[in-house]
Image (cartoon, rainbow, N blue to C red; front, side, top):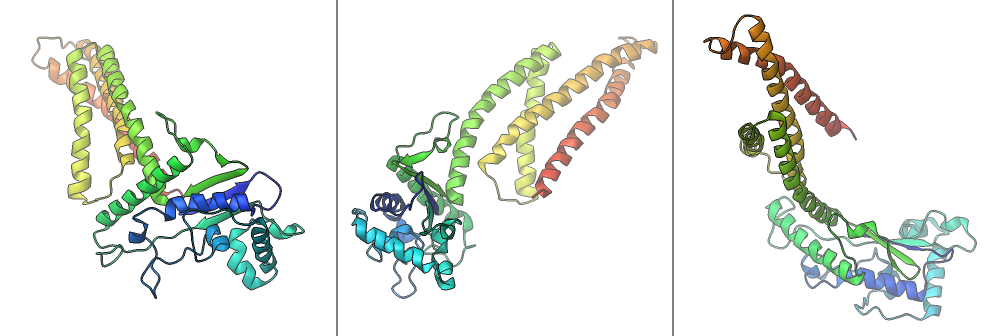
Length: 329
């Protein structure tokens, strides 16, 4: 878990008030009741290791206090001065440069308007032999923990998401301090929430495509059959993906393929039906009319030959586009 903190004032971010706010933000993570089940362990005590990569540790030390009391301003200034002074040595820069912005040493006296913290978790979880032991189960447990982290942060900063509007689109501030955080599991949770909301739009897409197919084909029954073929392609593809290629990876993002399949499928139906309509005049120009035993066969043959190239081209170019995206950095 990464935190970044920024002050909108051109002065040291390390004030008693800011340090307290930073501590409370970090404690939203560290004070979760299940944190001891996920924390990085101390090799000596087998308890949770002290999160030395945090601003809270720099100012509160080993006696981390969930209440984050307001520290004496003189103590904070003295501690910050010690941190800045340490930057004069290579060892100090290697140890404490992590907490400073790049322009810190170009100022006189030294100060930073931004800082950051890093809180690692341990792995594997208790009851598992390695990171890869029942990896799906472990990932599920990590996700449950980070869901609590998200809930805690949203509650701490009074963040609220709306339909099709993420709470992360707003700046998260408290006084002069701006807060940001990131972890891959939190990103995955947010992505899942966004995709779930987007999927509600799939119902409107299905309805729109169905109505347009019925209008273009001038037949409700053809619209129903066309939509059925498009939708049935999804479980068939999933069966090949999961059972034949034995690929277990599946996320909410995969569900968005419904939009791609709808577009390609409807386009193929339109192309074939247009080919069928055009074939009518071509067949009759050859003296073959309805009632002739060869009429439907010839008409279908012409429709297929005209549609196959267009259907192949659209499908192939789509495949190439996805392949190019997959190999691009």
